[in-house]
Image (cartoon, rainbow, N blue to C red):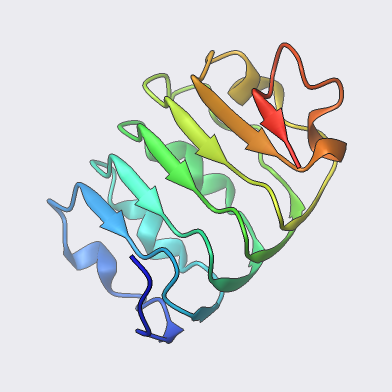
Length: 135
């Protein structure tokens, strides 16, 4: 799990067109999430938690319609979580806590009915029925 890859996420990951599983948690990654990562439309798992990633979460996250598992918790992300999860109907788990997101959990992700949806309590008030937990 924990590693020391370090540095930034390469912008050419979109060249891995058949990639289904990308697990980069706890790798001491810095910088922003490259927009090209959202071009891997068959991606089912995107695990970026426990790094030092910054910037905003792109609205292109909604292009990952095959996504079933998404973790971005424990980073330094800012801005609002985009309300673009309408087409990501297979998403079962998503974690956003321990960042600097503002606003509230978007309606499009609340309506999916995830088995696990966690965020900072300020994003999830009221916690039910949207978030399954908050920190």
